[in-house]
Structure formats: structure tokens, C-alpha cells
Image (cartoon, rainbow, N blue to C red; front, side, top):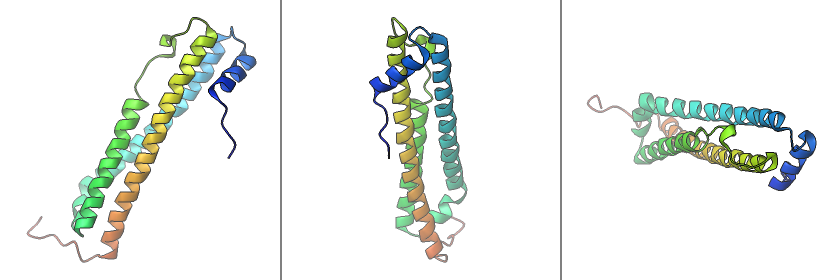
Length: 157
């Protein structure tokens, strides 16, 4: 896997491509990057919502398979909820690009790239948490499928 550019190298590349006085095109390029990040975050949140909704409908049946399945469903849905919280608080938190600090274009670019990188970090953490939560959830479903008669409802519960 190729190595990513360092923060300083990325700044240098952007300033060389756009010029250090070209604030508007640099802002437009960064807006597109933030749009991609926010759109991908929405996908993560949609998947989290599906898992949480599915648990509301079938979690009880899955958890009825065994104590291990109960634990896996609880840990899975809690991890998915943590993924959603990470994305909401870390990525979807909003500070406008025009509010970023910087005395000149280069200083503003530095601040804005750091802001983008922080949001990207939270997105990646949320993605890992979602994947872990899904793995726990799928393990619980696997237990249910391996033991299809182990989860009868007792007295309507």
C-alpha cells in the first residue's frame, strides 16, 4: 500500500497547484472533500440504524438462543451505537470552513487540513466500531442459526 502524503507535503502540493493566493478554488476543493466525508458518514449512520432497528424486531428471538447469543447481541448493538455516536459527534459536528483560523491562505489551509484529518480519523474509528458491532451481531445470528430450536418463546416472552 502506498504511503500517504505527510501533512506538510499535502499542503505544499495544494499550494503549488492552486497558488498561495487562490483561496476560493482551494476552499471549493476542500468543500468537496468534506462533502465526501459527510456522505460516507451518512452511510455509516444508515447501517447503524438498520442494525438497531433489526435488533428491535428480532433481537429478542436471537438473544433467546443462549446466554452467549444474548451477550453478543448486547455487545454488538452497543458497539454499533458507539459507532453512530462517534460519527455524529466526531464527523458531523459542524464548523464552517470560513470560520477556520489563519492569517493567510497557507495558515488557513493548515488549520483546515487538520480539521479535515480529525474528522477523517473519527470516521475511520466509527467504521471500525461498526464493523466490530456487525461481527458481534452476526456471531449472535450464527448461534441462532446453528441452534434453530433453542429459542422458543416461553409464555409469550
